[in-house]
Amino acid sequence: DIQMTQSPSSLSASVGDRVTITCRASQSINSFLNWYQQKPGKAPKLLIYAASSLQSGVPSRFSGSGSGTDFTLTISSLQPEDFAAYYCQQSYSSVTFGQGTKLEI
Amino acid sequence: EVQLVESGGGLVQPGGSLRLSCAASGFTFRSYWMHWVRQAPGKGLVWVSRVNSDGSTTTYADSVKGRFTISRDNAKNTLYLQMNSLRAEDTAVYYCARDGIAVADDAFDIWGQGTMVTVSS
Image 1 (cartoon, each protein chain N blue to C red):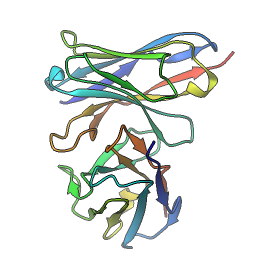
Image 2 (cartoon, rainbow over the protein chains, first blue to last red; image 1 turned 180 degrees about the horizontal axis):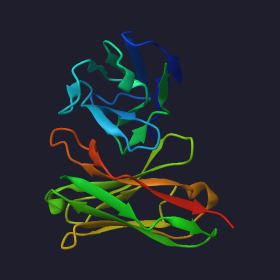
Image 3 (cartoon, rainbow over the protein chains, first blue to last red; image 1 turned 135 degrees about the vertical axis):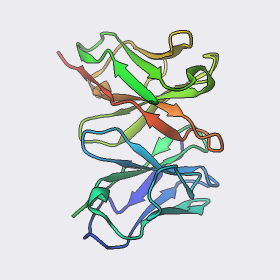
């Protein structure tokens, strides 16, 4: 099974900060990597698919990059509504999620 | 409005069974692969199962293989998850999700609100 490891597990930041979350796969997954945002008590929301494609309706301050085993999600200027948990997910072989990154004020 | 609405969760004893449903609306349900994803309280997301568009192909996580069965009724626009031999570790919110990105397999663009399953005596 492919393991996905996110770092950091939690992150404190302020409105306006630039934030980067990383996700590492235990083997190459090409660009089969998606990112989700989840707010407390709510379902996850797709932000980025295929490593770098922005899902429709998602603000352009979110971006994704990487291929192979190393990926990043970047939020260019944090907004109050961005404080949430973020998950990476590989779809190269079956489906596996990372353990999540909690972004706090 | 594109929507998924889960139902069927509740409290069940260890070893018991439960069937979850996910009603789809606002899109052509029969055209999409569908998935179940679960989240234990305070924990991360875990993929459970998927079914192809016509229901002929299913895949399961090792942790539920042989105990859970995914199915769909395209005439009723409904996805199901039959859960048997339930264990305490199956306690979670269960989400159904649509595999909706044409150029990215297994990218979940629409999610239901979730239904809570609690396995406890």
